[in-house]
Length: 317
Image (tube, rainbow, N blue to C red; front, side, top):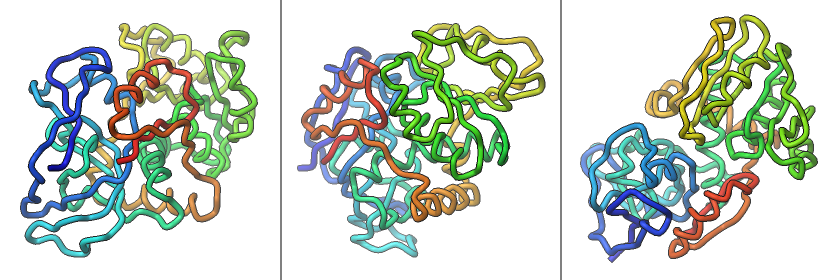
């Protein structure tokens, strides 16, 4: 029987465990995907640890929103896809039901896109969610334009590194923020014009057009102060569970939820076209920090919690 990762209670990484489950059958309009690799994301850490903003039932909750593999079966009324097609799962609306930490999952056919030829399974698992989130937040929501100045908080995260590539593709000046000076050279090599290492440096004040934040928490107001009057701060994550401090009304505040775009066929098509072009010309690429096996999923979450990775943690199936 195929295996899947589930958890019965909120807690530390060791609440995750593998079970055998019946092979899921795709319903009408769905496909079954044989998973080859999946990315490990902060939102899954939040779900497992109790910080996830939406309720979900326990026990036996599945987990995981980013994966890649090959179509294994088609439900009724699915057209344009075939068994064996390599795909990226672009959206998992209910990951407690069909999360991708598994050998197989079923998802709506509209939630998969062709896997670009430039990406193998590990690269694809590290690429989509970070880049789709960064593009959706920066371009579709915040209207980032060539010539803008962009400050990227948590620049060494997968979303931060994706934002650096997207800034380079658009002709945007990007400043990366990190807590660790040791990451400065790697961030410069990844495309940052400059790096603010908060263990040594002060954040700029009133100089950028747009701030991309993945943290929130008490430092939000100080981060927003980097934006010019009339600038924008857009938050795409909640890695700091503490209550945020909000700035004055001189900066536009936005919150971004990726499912709003990845479940919209028109926006999904634009995202895939932009990211595909970036892959083909080399301005966009996945950054893989470390790869684990499926039976090492607890170790993968323990590694995520250390917060020292540079890019994406990937699990192969």
